[in-house]
Image 1 (cartoon, rainbow, N blue to C red):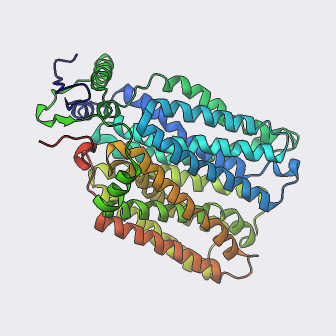
Image 2: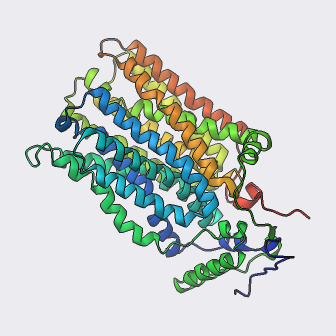
Image 3: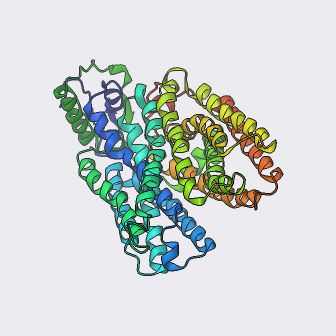
Length: 485
């Protein structure tokens, strides 16, 4: 055991344990180990963006003779699967550990997406789109928890935000794949879309081997009665960091905490934590998640309708306008992410939410006056979502770090489910506002609504948010298992 570790078991097995695990993890320098965590776990968002974009192009609709309504329900089925997966696997992640779940959920996704590409009938496609959604939903809960618990506190904000932003890299990959696989000059109508469905599983198979070498969260082990395993895991990580050339500072012994093992936290305790102990944090998390989901689904699921109905683009050309939109969403978190660790969480959340809302409001006024083209409309979207993407990514960061470790995955899953429910309203609402493209007034009002919602989200985060930058997770929120003297 490391000479820098102080661990005393008090009383009988299951009694309080003094641990330096969080302090040891947060003082680590950045090395290849942390890059392996990013690559191995961060692939989840790439896969989700890839899935959404591939399915959005509806390459299977012609083969199965699906109506627009049926295609829409297929997307809804995937989203329902995500909600169920997040809630079910979020609780299991808190109970059984992060590693078991981030392996299991990836396997479920691989099966669901790959088998869906072999669908002989519509019902079969629906079933396995639901299964793929289960896996991705579980990934959101288990992966965010694992990343935040393995990454040192001074890097946590920028890393989490950048990883969440890679969704748009996956979406861009999906759009490029669609241009190739849905080209009927290259592939028959019943072949191309099936091949596209295998892109995600192929990437996932490559990543699953990397995930096998990512350790269980030492923080989870510490709070579940596995202190020896937690210490041994940190020993291994420190040894790897040293082999990779990192210099490790001495651990601050005053940061030791005494914890008592927990198993499964009852729902009544979770409700008490969310609604009674931290009601302001719950308000912030819910507002941030709902507002960003509503805005994203409103614009993302209707941008093609806007470009075709109001600007006269051919459906085949719309795909090309998606790339700059996706690139703006991808770059935003990468450029702005470090500022969440330096300028601070609340200031940056407020800034990104409000700026994105104001840019959207300006574009709404210009849209109403018919002063935009398809290109300039896309430019405004790119600018707005350059900021909104960083803000949306910070929503996932926020809900993962402001609640106790023992319910972290579940908290993420509940807010994720809430966001998906409210976000599901937006495509139908804004699709109706688009109409046949003859009246700009309804959609203009919708854009103002979306802008206002984002601004409100930023203001609430500024007033009630938590200054979590560069702080250990345990100092932001005391674990439920901490023993007070």
